[in-house]
Image (tube, rainbow, N blue to C red):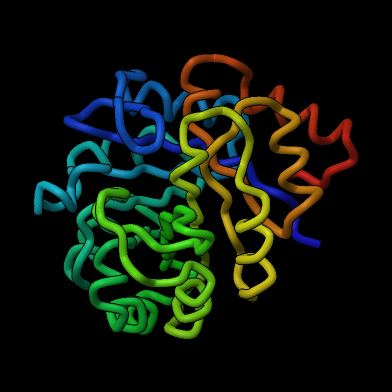
Length: 250
C-alpha cells in the first residue's frame, strides 16, 4: 500500500501567498519562500505552487518566484498556473519544478495532456480538476473556478488518465477554505474511477478531517493551505497524529 502524503499548497497572487474561501475573498498568508522553507523543515512530503491568476490574466507563471522557491526546498515540487505548451513546461522544469499542474488548458485542449505526457513522462503531468455540485451533478470548472462547464467530473478524470495524466489534483470548490472537511463523496468516487494517484484538496480544518479522508477514500495524498499557513497545526504534528491513528504516512 502506498503511504499517504501530506502536501502544503502555496496559492500565489502578485508574489504573495494568499488564501480564500470557495476560491474568492483572498487574504494574505505570507511570503512563499519563507512558507516553503517552513514546510520542508516540518516534514512535508511535497509542495504545490499555484499561480492562481495566471490563466485569468492570460500570462505565464512567475518563473523568478518559482526559481526562488525551488532553490529553498528539497522535496518534490509541483507548479501550476498559465501552462499551455511544451515550452511553458520546459521553462518551469528548468526553474526547478519536478511536476506541473494543468487545469483550464487541459479542459480547453485535452490533447495537451497527451503531448506533455509523451514529452516529459506521465509522472510529470498532474491534471487539476476543480469541481462543484450543480443540480446533483459534479461539474468541472475552469478559469480559477470562475467558469462552469458541462463536463462531468468523473468522466473528465477518467479521460485525463487515458490521455496520460500521472496524477489527479481534485478540489471541491464548495469545500475550499471552509475548514468543514474534505468532500469525501466525490473524492471517493474519483479514486474508484481512476488507477492513478488522487490528491484531495479543499476543506481541511482539523486533523480528524485528514484521518477521515484517508480512511473513507482511496486518496493517496491530502493537500491543504490555510490550516498550515495560519498555524492551526504543523505538518509534523499532523503526521504524528495520523500515525497514532494507524494510518500509513510517509
